[in-house]
Image (cartoon, rainbow, N blue to C red):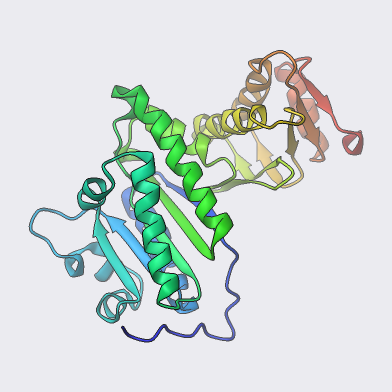
Length: 293
């Protein structure tokens, strides 16, 4: 095996994480993915890439190794720093089940660690799953994404899930964003959640992203209900730069639809947001934290 590349000393290697990158256009998604892969190669990570290949094409003929791809991708395929697996083969090897998918990824991680790679980066292209036609697949999908979280928590692994909106059904987009509410990047807004369960949306929230923002809110509420302790959702508003009426309505409607006993607790944020929430109708299930008063 070619010796693992050393990370450049001037590059800070990021911590393990499991992120969703949302793109409104295929080219936009490719640019984001290329940048991510290029950084990981520079960090000295072992990169596992799963993507779609047109019939008869080889991995070295994928867009990833062409002019639009990251620098060093073609050389990384040759040296073994990056491995490409086409998605149909990945489905065949995993059996298409949550346990099979996680087993496939876990095997790759363990093999990379055995080969003494210091960190592992894993990404896959938009899966194009027919969730709208197969509700049972939604449950399977949620389970295997939770398995990805476990991989990132246990080992030095960074996972980037790609979501190309034009290629997926509305149900797939909704469920994908919902399950990734802990770490989602979508154009000019993003969201994260910390270990304490505080959910933090950031950036500009307008009508263009309102439905996806709503999916993330519902995903955060759903995750809070699974906690053994307090099931309230705590939302940190301090990093929101802009929110329009559509997204304010979605946030308040999500809180209104929460089961009895679950509340949405608001922390921080600019004063205009409180006036906006009052204007669209603030339900009794929304309350201010002490630090926001």
